[in-house]
Length: 123
Image (cartoon, rainbow, N blue to C red):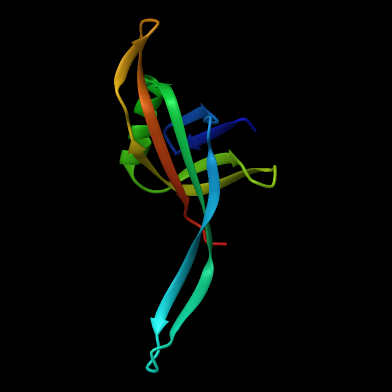
């Protein structure tokens, strides 16, 4: 898969993989300090985290992403996983950063978009 598909019940958008997609995992754990002063850490699992950065994206595509994010809830994201398979999971998607607005060949584009996605499920 050479793209990321983000969707909810109303919208769906297909974005190409960015130049530097970062797919990793984040530890989910609890730390507790015991009466003896010793700190005990219980690892619950790991969450998939995806960060994508786009040099430029059409304004129509960004509008769909913004509408899905503002609607709230988790979004279905299809992405290429580290093991080479295609995965589909629910993610909390946030628009971390947007750059400047420009016209490219007569159509509006946003530059410098960064999307941060964190999976709902802990594995």
